[in-house]
Amino acid sequence: MTDPGTTSWELPADDETADPTTIRVDEYLPHPPERVWRAFTTPTLVAQWLNTDDFLPEVGHRFTMAGRRVEATGFSGTVASTVLAIEPGRLLKVTWTDAANPDLVPTTVTWTLEPEGRGTRIFLEHAGFDPDDPIAQLSRRIMGGGWRSMVFRRLSEVLTALD
Image (cartoon, rainbow, N blue to C red):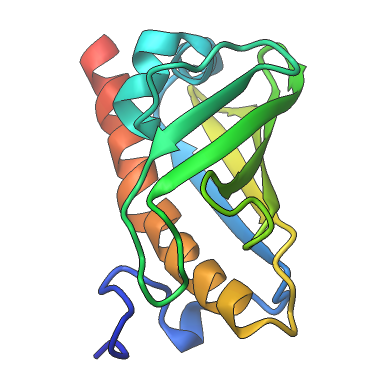
């Protein structure tokens, strides 16, 4: 059961990582790295799994993503991001903040792709959560569940549609 004002897809307490500053997700997808990288860097494909219509794979590019408003954390429902780093075929790093209140819980998200067999292992690191801030920790629990239950599922659906 979730607390009032939280969501059903947040991380349960026993599923949290030991590091309260970071969400880490290790996900295997049965698609070749080239296809996965395409889904990470082709704006029309990124739009399908990250809810953005203004992404460009260029360092310094700013874009927004539509999310769900979360009253319990004060999140407006819109994520503002800037592309911080790109290593073609391997790494994408962006800032991740509330568009309406950039100081609320400012974090970064890094996706690292590694070939594994005939597929791709994706390591997600969502870092920068203040361990002493209850809002940051609630945000971490909610986003940790969202990465696992929603975002990777949508990415997988986009990749399967490319087959």
